[in-house]
Length: 140
Image 1 (cartoon, rainbow, N blue to C red):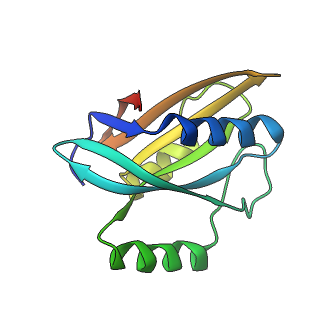
Image 2 (tube, rainbow, N blue to C red):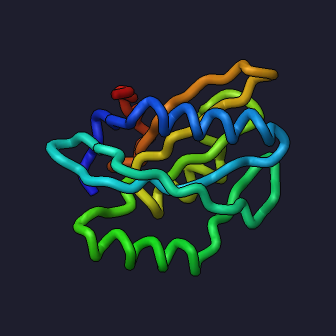
């Protein structure tokens, strides 16, 4: 994957992700961002919530079977898994565990930091050429 500068995501998708994150502040939510990459810009066309198999407040795990099935499904329609989203019970900075997996999966990582009731921050990141880079979020 190339270095991504911007993620374009429909506002209603962000609202759904935030809503789910606020519902379960003690367990990270997680899911996949599906769409296309054009000229260093990720365009989100769909989102897919996945159960957090870890059921943890400090890490998430997506079922490999769901991941595989989703890759097969999106490939058939000319799209791709272009990002991963999850929540944190704190700021939306990548954790040490996130960074480890970001290196393996250099897609955009959208993180929702749940800071309290109805209080949250959103940030997007990508691991590219040995560094974590902030990715601009554009709502449509």
